Length: 375
Image 1 (tube, rainbow, N blue to C red):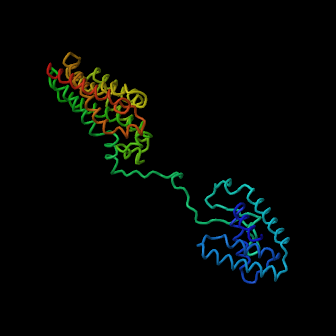
Image 2 (image 1 turned 60 degrees about the horizontal axis):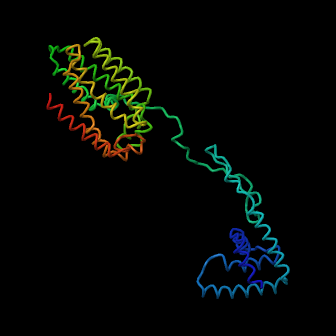
């Protein structure tokens, strides 16, 4: 009967930790159990501590049965004493298992973490009091949560500004503006053309800088834009905002005093459309593509206005051609970037309605051919 009791206890209440403690304590040199029944409990329980093969299990079980009989004979232990010891240990196990684990609720607020051990842990073989707190040294501090001084490399500032202004995109905007200037039926004035180039370049750089400031949380989720200067931290948003403010002020002032008020008004309108309407609308509706095409169609009008001082049918035709060109160009670009746009939460036509994306590209391509033929 006694040989069936201990595996059942281990199966239903199985605190292997406590059994290991009893066995370890009973095997230590010079250790004498206060109660002989503990030896019986440890000897029988050691059969179930580690899984072994069937043959080895049978031989080991026979040896343990013999050991238990010898212990009972030597210590004059009765079955009643063994049963009482089992019940006592069983109640201790239940009490220990029913206590909540206090370590799960200990806040760690200091880098020198202090761990408190359980006071009810057995102290018989411990050199020190186990309730003494243990201090963990050489802990690693979370570096990403600490303030650090930004070190700005002065020689790299022009390269950072070039990235912040989207230099290639700004170059395309200036190029389309100069196309409008060259196609206008007005006199060629080098000063006004230079002012148009400089003013348009600074205004476009300001718009692109504001766009990057507003889209830092979303651009960081896209493979194409996650290495921009604001996301990598080489420039702060305040630094970028000051660059945008200075560029916008300088660009619009050059357009106003170097060309005329109409050109400066078109530049200011384009700046507001791009930063205040188009950029936020990218995360709200697919209408952003239609509005963004208007932004791309204004630069030829600025060039025409800088040369003639007014807008005529030729300027409107050039603007319409560039407006229609935006759809096949941008839809083709965004089609391959659909996973990136979807991850960042941008509501592009290629992501929301791929069918409409294909149809709008085809329709505007046909319109583009018709307008170019008419011109």
